[in-house]
Length: 250
Image 1 (cartoon, rainbow, N blue to C red):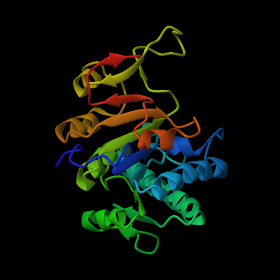
Image 2 (image 1 turned 180 degrees about the horizontal axis):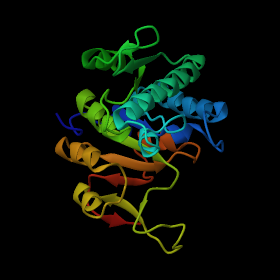
Image 3 (image 1 turned 120 degrees about the vertical axis):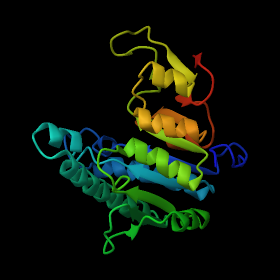
Image 4 (image 1 turned 120 degrees about the horizontal axis):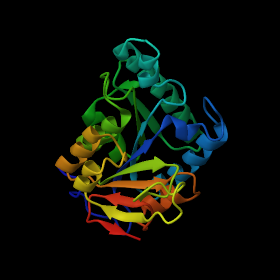
């Protein structure tokens, strides 16, 4: 299995995994979920899904609860991580509702059994949903403490044989230094997995990067706050930074 096994449909990726942080759903709020932000994300996803791209989503829970912070405050780390997993399901259900209001068939699958509100994660069922044109949202992380939702995104992308992981951020891509500190910072258009790992660029955690490297799954880091970027990225337009190619700066 590898991320390049699917053929491109014109300029559009056939199957992508979109990684959304919980913080992406907050907007300008300090906590929780901004309905307008969720509706905007759902609208862009709906537009791309209507064009035939198969879309899976992994969503974080940092807008509600972050396990690392809970552990830092004295909570048992495993317990804190499980609470964080439950928070991701809340976000997944919220996004599902926004998509279904746009008449996009959507399924939430969770790594922790919650049969009253979501399906259990079953790889073959997830792939079948995607093939039928349904958006699949993976909640509850990997179901294991001590693993991030970035690692979950890499794992699920490998399992469903995704062409691309789209890592949504608040910046235009990966820079050689902090653009907020140095206005001369240069944006990388592409990077190797090795460069990201060696220079500790904090794109995703090292476990996630290694999984993508081993399974040849490219990662596109892009700015979610720019309207239309989800559509542009999924259609193969040049935005953000692609990890998995050579090192190239803009």
